[in-house]
Length: 249
Ligand SMILES: C[S@@+](CC[C@H](N)C(=O)[O-])C[C@H]1O[C@@H](n2cnc3c(N)ncnc32)[C@H](O)[C@@H]1O
Image 1: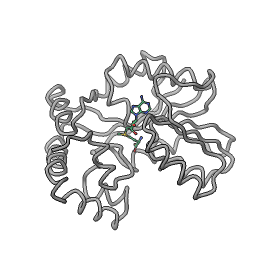
Image 2: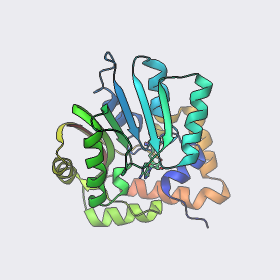
Image 3: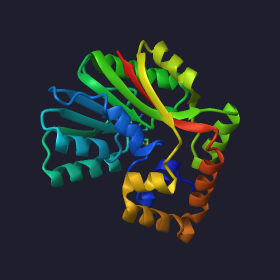
Image 4: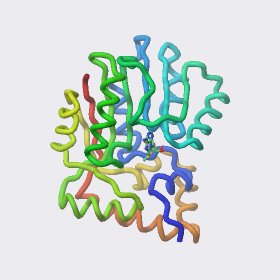
């Protein structure tokens, strides 16, 4: 059986939001953005651009840039941008660890469900880049996985089920990583992982698409991985949460 990374697999099934706390976590982060002003927003690891396409349609005074390493996702974001006729958003392939933007270019940096995928050393490397490109008093908005119990065991079981070695942290260690990178944490929100719960999927994708995703997940070629991920997420319900942080430069 072909082993795909969890987010690549869920995307193949039709999932558009690939973050642990779904739209609830994202809405908490976005509530910290002041769209009344002429702001510049960078989203790192934007995938197919679901956040920025919506925001750019709604807030014409703001300017948005979305980057991701995955060319196919960026192509999808750009074709949707063309369809919607948006001229206040740009998408391109770029690496979070080597941002080609001048210092202090952005009012906000959004980064959902990416830092968890990297070691602490790499997390700090990325955070140093985010700090550099943010303006003074700018906000970094992140969305990741938080460990609650049996840290190492939870990390291993999760990594094994999504076919990628991931490095979620307990809350205090996330805060430490941000403060080591000179950020000041000003707010956070955590809650149950909703990525694969029926109610979370309905909130994120709507009823019709949730049925399509589940139907695709239960097809013969996907069933083993789909059920394994679903079972693991249920099993680890008490051991991990999603966590969103608002960090100030
Ligand atoms: C779990 S997905 C989350 C996607 C999206 N942020 C969301 O929440 O739906 C992780 C994303 O990080 C991207 N990514 C991984 N490493 C990256 C890097 N070094 N620079 C930019 N994007 C990266 C992947 O291509 C993928 O789109």
